[in-house]
Image (cartoon, rainbow, N blue to C red):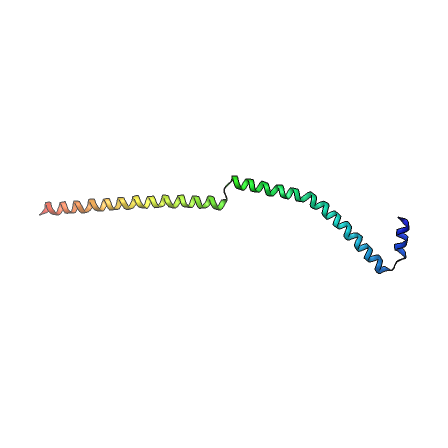
Amino acid sequence: MFELIEKLRQKPDRTKKQIAFLVAFFLTGIIFVIWLSVVYPDFKQGNLKEEVVSKLEPSPLGTFGETFKTGMSAIGEQFTKLKESISSISKDLTSSDVATTTLGQ
């Protein structure tokens, strides 16, 4: 090992820098592969958990849509009831006007 270091010391600066860069690049690659092997399984498990949760729980947008549909149908029913009430009141008023007019003659 010391012989290799002595040989490297005798080489020109450009060659020393190239060897240093390659060794640093190689060590960085090894560290990256180890990091990736630790992080990737956790990432994959996290994605699987999110899929399971998304299947169990409806999305917020879907929940809002259902709530909005329910509210709009309830408003529609109230308008229908109001329309029926107004029409029945107007029928009662017109029939009482007719009765009053015929009685008054």
